[in-house]
Image (cartoon, rainbow, N blue to C red; front, side, top):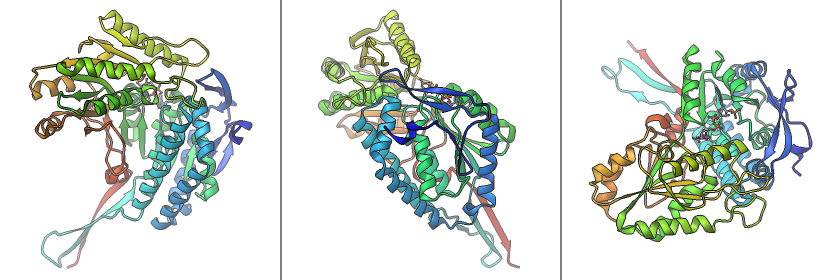
Length: 487
Ligand code: NDP
């Protein structure tokens, strides 16, 4: 049993592990079994205020403010090594708390987090301004500076808790900011273990503070706090909109990574075996709880039977089981509430005329398991097609003589614009679709894999701003213009 679970869970504020003043707590549940894993401290406005003040001191007066960028790089690299050294333990915590297969947690969640730290570590020494040629040579010395935006509030969801926390912490620290992290109330475990490792590798007090608690209390207090310069949020579009309103008080900067309803297009000339495999992985991985999940499949009528049967067969074959079972491929959804929500969508799809060709049922037992589900005969007006389900449910539509313009318009007929995939061997089709799709991320003959060099984010109601790449780390900076009159 990981040592984290052998003690009461606490908050990390100013380098100290502390309880919360109210003494409030809630159960942390294993979604594979419904069993209680630990008691989580529910921090509130008081703890958020202490954390923000600690982050401010570390930013302006503490050692962080005087640290050279290369030292920030070194610390981030040390943390990446620590994550790998403790990879089995972190993966176990993630599997216990989310239900996802242990090997996925080890390879993807932990591996991804370590890689993200290494990628961003390099940026600490490369965030340069530039000189600008203004007026006559010799009259002015004009240049730009990149400076840390300040104290940043980070709010993350429960679907990939460790990787999501690191994907915000790493660029924020590389840029020289200090942070207050609010993990999702359902999944605090790996964030807290990450905090322990950060203290152990030598991050100074106050640079990273972790306040577990409810979104409507700790989360809201963080977003509204006047001492916070920026909020970076990943989660639902509805909460993203609420955050915008709460952040208005001091006009803090806001970055939003929100939901998606991403289209996948399979043309008849595609490598169908690969396309079928990727379409299945794209919606069923992480039990469909992925913002970029390919949840709307558009398939050409001439290959629809083969593609639908191929994806449905994979859906039936996937081993749905607790993440600690050796050959588990699909874990539970995160909570009983999420299972109800997903099953209500499947019921609404059926009621509106969709046909279930695979899955469609919740599994009996204590855990929150749902069969991977494929719905055909779906139409653009159905709720299952319009709304983000965040579960293992694929909605299939067919096309035949649509022009590329019409087809792209069908793909774009959504409030979201996060991701999309195009499967074709025809260059013209691929390029023309790429240009027409209103999505922040487009993949051709590939599923929506992440690479830290590539900016990730959404058009439309899928968000504001980009994570990853130069853009992702520059998002944690302010740009200062300096002009010196040399006359
Ligand atoms: P939320 O958007 O409700 O939560 C995400 C994070 O925001 C959590 O840490 C949450 O805290 C916090 N939060 C909630 N309300 C507030 C608030 N008013 N102010 C500040 N922070 C707040 O997502 P859920 O976890 O409830 O999931 C609901 C749906 O959101 C999913 O079914 C899915 O559609 C979508 N979603 C999208 C994700 C994505 O990656 N795009 C990820 C997760 C969810 P707390 O945990 O206490 O609620």
